[in-house]
Amino acid sequence: MSLLSVKELTKSYDGTLAVDHVSFSLQEGTATALIGPNGSGKTTTLSMIAGLLKETEGSISRDFQSGVGFLPQYPQFFPWMTALEFTEMAAQISGVDNKKARKQSIKTLEFVGLSAAMNKKAGTFSGGMKQRLGLAQAIVHQPKLLLLDEPVSALDPTGRREIMNLLKSLQQDTTILYSTHILNDAEEMTDQLLFLKQGKLVEYGSLPEVKSRHAEPRIKLRFDTEEAAAIFEKRQLWQMDRDRNIIQIPFTDAGPTMQQVLAVLADNDTGIAGVEKQNASLEEIFLKVAGER
Ligand code: ADP
Image 1: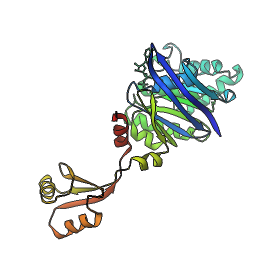
Image 2 (image 1 turned 135 degrees about the vertical axis):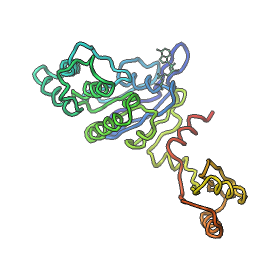
Image 3 (image 1 turned 180 degrees about the horizontal axis):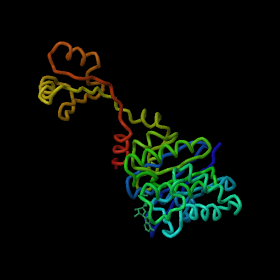
């Protein structure tokens, strides 16, 4: 069942299209990664879905009963409030009744790993703690739809891992739409990828679908030394790219088969350290999709 559906969603600022006729839907219980370079319209899209910004054209249909949580890219806190006070206020604003708000806030702060800091003022929090508090305010009312704008971009690798793990554990009962430009994270938690470029949706689908559309399989050879790789490169007539001791040979009709490559490696003392077949990474697909004019 689709929990949210946007059709021809468009936002124009003084005639410039920040979001340009974007359509997609989110199936219940799935995670969708909204990917795009800076300025491609990710924040604008999420803000319209969160109801913080009015669309210029198009429609957003969602089940308003189910509740929405939103973590902005730069969440704002009142520095004098404690984490618990802030979360409780967010719960009340989202319609949780006063009696339940405290209990639910404590539970949520425990879930995001802030139980020890619950009574500390948000103004004293580190970046990672602020991001956890931001997540707490977004989920305290147990929304069915969770919108997250670059939830892990400002964090160090440890913080990123922790927040990604929290998000993954929310995934069972929540439909998640999050923007990111960290493609490893997108690859880790996604049922659907949406690529934005200059406000337009230029590619979408599941990870395997997107990967297979842009797959450019190739043979990757790793040599013991740069010299060994350079010698191999000079001797063979195939099209290949060399980066220090790594050589990549694209699989094309004109190129060699894996067997031919292996035969050459077996016949010569090439100083080979490893051979693998590789597919395009999401990073490479992103650069290709984002870079195409
Ligand atoms: P992203 O989140 O992908 O970095 P944004 O949604 O923030 O992209 O921005 C998309 C485009 O809209 C950019 O070109 C940006 O300059 C423009 N834009 C965003 N907000 C405003 C605004 N309030 N007024 C004018 N232009 C804006």
